[in-house]
Image (cartoon, rainbow, N blue to C red; front, side):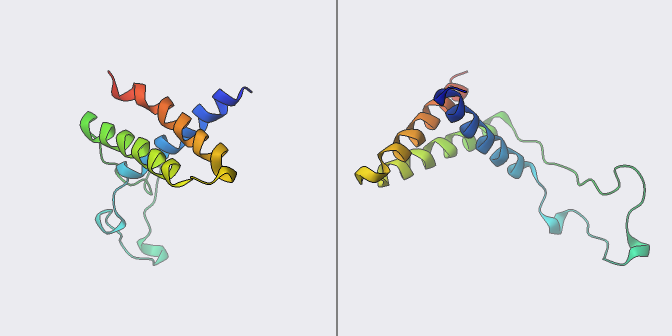
Length: 102
């Protein structure tokens, strides 16, 4: 696998995880019924919590935050020993930018 592919995979996985986390409903809102076995939901999909649907703008904001965070951390890595990590973070930000252009 080429280095560019590893960078893209890393950036995309982290961003997809951030989007997935943003869609999660807080536990308090999920309707916990208690911990007793007899109160546990039964049947296919009974333990699935509803997910929030993100608007296109909200998803773009999350991608923008991912880019900003990578660039912010890269800017703090000024020592020569961290040059490779800073370059990788900048490359990850560059991979994510095109998703904001359409």
